[in-house]
Image 1 (cartoon, rainbow, N blue to C red):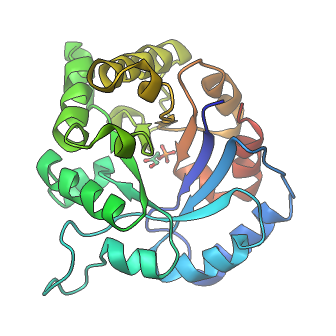
Image 2 (tube, rainbow, N blue to C red):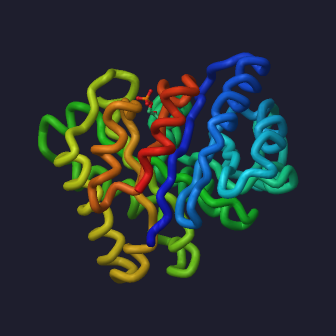
Length: 253
Ligand code: 13P
């Protein structure tokens, strides 16, 4: 079975102590994950080691960075490279979140370089795509997200891209309480998979987990995750509340 993933994105929230407590509370629930199920915590850089230690003995619990730089190393004060993350045993990194695309001017081309940096350093990118409201209203979301995949991912060889995780996050659903309906989520996830299949073939397309993100909560996760092409969620607000995120992990197929 394709991997099913509950990924928390804490964004710029929590003090260190609040983060420790949140991890304690989530892990106290003792949710045992099957081989195909993963829980990944994308935490602020200074909390990576604390979170990594917290999950060290847990099966299929992992830690992710929320970003990395697109260059290997150099005079980029304040930045973090994929190589640095690898040297700290971090295995995942969110790449191209819509907030970074908007506030940090990250382009599809730059994201292609970040994805390369991740793979060169044995880090699995959790690659985000998704359309803003005006694109959804114009009905051109499929072309928009397909271009994001093509421009940032389709230079990768098949045996590399097959390891990626994709997160479809419609911008109009992030932090707004507006969730895509299950029909909307399934439709665009299936479309994204068909775009990957067109480039790399069905077998590879069927291996890649496509997560849904945008106001995923305990009370809608099960329904969203039940869609054939929705392989879990990338969760912002609800990942900061232990009771919510516990239910979201439990909702994985
Ligand atoms: P919310 O779950 O708060 O809508 O955030 C979604 C998101 O951006 C996760 O990366």
